[in-house]
Length: 200
Image (tube, rainbow, N blue to C red; front, side):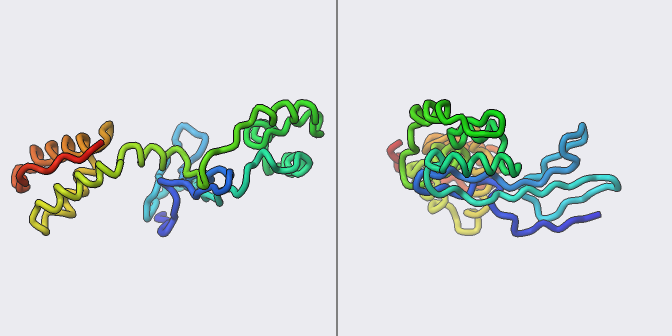
């Protein structure tokens, strides 16, 4: 069977959290989850399944609004009772300690006292943070300078190949190194003249 799964957003970057709220999860598609035949499909337009396969589609959900450690403990306990949260998540994400199905007020107070609110207006999640550490403004300046120096019909191809070869690289020097690898792999690609150095 072939399953269509187009327009499934947020498989690379999480929905943002705001005002102290955390970013949500990532969307995903998993074939035969929890088995030795498990396959994570990531962001695909179609999925090909065999008889007996199980397909799990995970939505990213929405990012949080407001510091979760400010949520009323009794509401968190109610979420745990309803199965929306695990006890472990209640402690780690909301700072609420639940014992015997009830809020342990003293333990909750001690745990929340150690909490440091998130800095900044938005919380983007680790994937976005990692991406921005790799693709700094100076890295984009270098990319644009390299592409501008190429004939227009080469630019999309060169950009795609540079992105593919940025693993383990970052900043303008990483972009330049990736471009050099692309030029070696595709000698027909015109090599531009010297490109102005961009600050790290």
